[in-house]
Length: 186
Image (cartoon, rainbow, N blue to C red; front, side):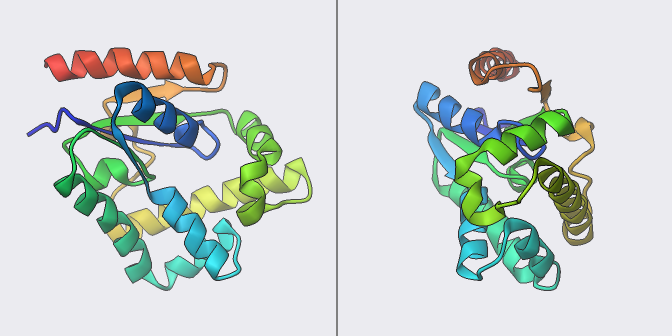
């Protein structure tokens, strides 16, 4: 059964997932739940970059499962939610599932210029940022398959797949809202 009051947003690194999730929650007056914030805070607590922490979690799957379980638990006790999480679509499968894609070179430029990322992924060059993003994505996809037996990068998992490479956050927001309204009518 569909949960017509839950939108889960995931995507490539630096695709605008967090920015758009926040804008969407504010625009719809929905609650915002972010797994990534929790993940980053755990990485910082351990004195690790997000990539290093992702590799650490490989050997501590209970941490990963607790992070993902927290989205399911939140959705079970709240209504009108935007879930900003890499596995939010899996944690709340009855949600409107959105995947944001982005060209890797554009993503690396976005991430490298983002001052909010510096606490958990301060890389010295744009090339190092790009290489770290490739490594992190590969590790994440492998971990998700091993733990959950799913391919997060299989676009058939989603109700909407949108390439944000040449779109502004406002354009992405508008498209998600349009498609969400159509989805709710089905």
